[in-house]
Length: 311
Image 1: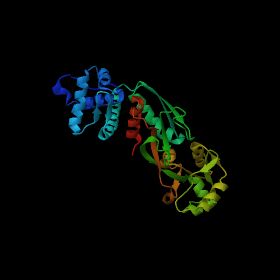
Image 2: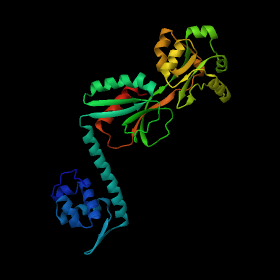
Image 3: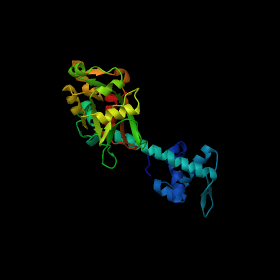
């Protein structure tokens, strides 16, 4: 176990060096004797004994029972030993983290992100991040597949929707809002829906994820209504850009992320409808493995993305 504090053999200094005394105490327990522990710290056995005495004076209790032939922990000593190990582990972890964070962020960072969100939000942020950190390279995987970031070697991922896995650190980003819209020509031809029930006479363009129709669940509609609309959809695809193109061509209505159609809504090429029935915005998180020694490249990326895309 590394020494983090400079050892001073003078009696007036060792007593106040509580962390070092804890380290010596742990070494005495684990090595089995004062002399063996003293060797680890390059001190004398009597000095190791003084560290133990200092802790016993501090807690006002005997930590060890020592005879000429053996030593054993008291009941208080066993609990104190366990607590010392946890405290020293946290101190070592904090020092390691501070040391790693002071290093220059560098290396390859692999991040996986849902396709539309990645194109609209993450890609512009990543280019700014790379401009700020010249020694980092980012590999951005854009996919709607649920990637196992540990198994497949990714440093981080963006997850849209409710998180099911608590084994990751999750930093919240801005929620993901949806929009229903169609072209002015389509609405002039078929009419503007006022409620979800009106969609029965509309062409609702379907988003397919892993072979299953996703989305198009509006507030105020029942499951039967959703099922009928899903079955009647004549155009389905797993790409939001393709659905946007179909909507612009006047083929039907599309339910897609507001960010994907924001420019068209501003220009009037697409018109928003059913705004009172939109699904609630989905939560978005940047997740990464729970690791107390996060690398500088990952720590800098997480902090940057939270500032750029966070709530």
